Length: 231
Length: 231
DNA sequence: CAGCCCACTGTACGCACGTATAGCCAACTG
DNA sequence: CAGTTGGCTATACGTGCGTACAGTGGGCTG
Image 1 (cartoon, chains in turn orange, brown, green, red):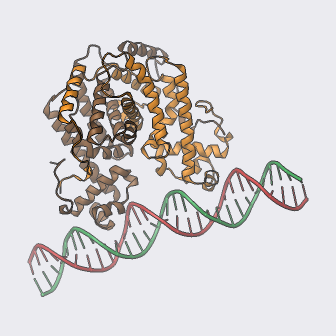
Image 2 (spheres, rainbow over the protein chains, first blue to last red; image 1 turned 180 degrees about the vertical axis):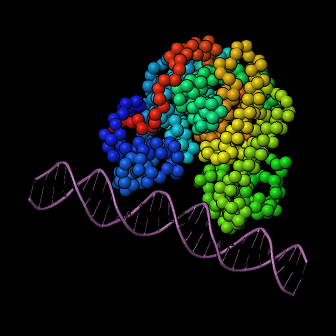
């Protein structure tokens, strides 16, 4: 069982564990390519050579960190699903708090494509999908698109808040990772998800409008980034 | 005026413009640190030395690209605000399509902190905020949090879809950048934003519950990433 | 035509990185 | 006590990067 809260003092950890923890920290803050073995070793209080000794290569170290986080998320997922409908919200405040340490690592992992990025994302989709099942029960009209698509988009949206938390913090004037900011974010999410930002009537008409204008894909998707004016 | 659609043939561009376009492309795909001057020069069909000749340094090249995109977004924003309530949706399909080439660049710029990252984000917040004004008019109860906070979170969410579009595409089984996938995403967003994923009753009770458990910030936000179990 | 400017190239320097390897030292084993 | 194992360090190698700089050729100006 991977513990989220308790932990032995840093000095009591195995050098291997200290390296892994340092790597989790650096990968989360700087990404995989941005982090360096030398800095990770310095944080762990060991020599760079020892990193290679224990993990073979930087890629090997990444693999260990990835599976560690994947396992943690998987256990967390199981625990949430086991509780079986604790309320109406997808996550309690405590649950969100427990995931905080891993959020930035998840973001970095998902953006730079590693092997476990897909399983990690799918695991989160599974979580939201499960929650959408219940949410769909209390709606009158059938959903416009399948549940999985909506779940995937909501996961991407949620991770977006974590990815750009620095900008969000700056705009709202408080750190979203602090208790105060987290509460404000939670309130905002409650508000957003409990109110229709688009009226159902307009959504219906917009759907029909879309069905007319674009019944099928027509244009080729060439490299759109090379379109700019000259000087 | 920066053109979004029309562009001269690649060979007719100034070498300087070709370098800038190549940089926009590489920065968008690989990020600033991931992109290399050598590869950018190769794409532009020039020598690496010419890049330095025209832009001074890699940082100077970034600065030019940043202001270019910032200007484009600013013009786009002005144009949208000028149209004054074209409908109920924040962006039309054509508008979204016009922003597509810059989305990945925006994501990369926002994640790696550059000087214009904050202005870019703020510009987008301004867009959503403006749209929220109208959305707030047609709701009965007062919002739980200020409009700016909700706007910032919605921007982060929206950018999250762009940031993780690869994973979303994999899960939903079609490229979200294609016409087909884009339409599906648009439909899903219409559905999500036109339905209450959380009942207002639960949201209200959850708000009161939160007010009790955490009336003020109490714990310090120490480094939460160093909490793990030993081996 | 002489002189100059400037876009542009080729080569080289210094640096930081991941990686490789030889060796040290404490702990365990017979 | 001799021998071996394994955690650990120090040093060095190769590579790719941003950067620097000398040089070149075409077009403009006087």
